[in-house]
Length: 248
Ligand SMILES: Nc1ncnc2c1ncn2[C@@H]1O[C@H](COP(=O)(O)OP(=O)(O)O)[C@@H](O)[C@H]1O
Ligand SMILES: [Mg+2]
Image (cartoon, rainbow, N blue to C red; front, top):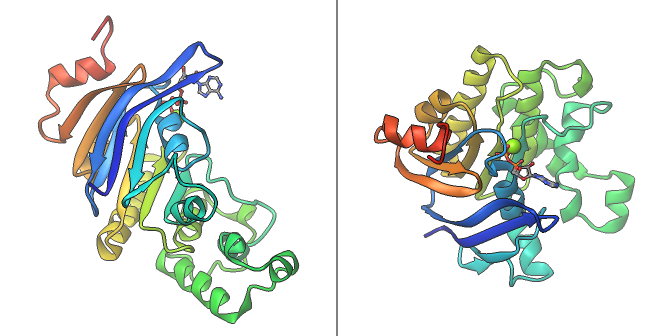
């Protein structure tokens, strides 16, 4: 397995069980969606995977490296290999699309060039190329605040690609967008995943979109995996377990 999650639990304030004994594996190149209602633990799962949040127990092994045992350099290498995009884009609104993409390179730069913003020609060309790849070749210098929601998510995708990640984590990437724009963004994500051979783990509360773009679905409910299988076998019974009333 390329990514193996085993027995991962996460509690907030010792009370809220956001993740309960979560386990699943991902093969390299898969596009998998985690579906489930609000509060199911989807965001917590992504935050645990990208190292933003420690988990209470369990194991995450990514490309042969144990996330929780890795320290210093190994952890930074892991994080470089995981790009994340968010529902709210998490961009710097006041600066240009190009600068937002370039900023992703800061952790890889020496102190002084980083502080002075001396990215160099190679990085600038790479960032411009990525913006062109996501369809924003004519918006390099546009302040992000002047872009539409769909364009902002395109900038965020370019930023995530700047460090050549092996895997993309996407937390409700189209939940803030209208349906047509959301579809276009997922088509772009899918195209990049297939041409670059990336592995994608996407959170979504939109079952129809997840079914359209994913190879496999993982259903979360109250922090526990209640389904892990093909999109077309997510029967009504399974969907009731994920979304339904009662004890599922
Ligand atoms: N920082 C936090 N502090 C306390 N509780 C949190 C925090 N983040 C999330 N939770 C709780 O953890 C559970 C899972 O939340 P979350 O991972 O955001 O789910 P989802 O993304 O599926 O909506 C919810 O009950 C939520 O209220
Ligand atoms: Mg969430």
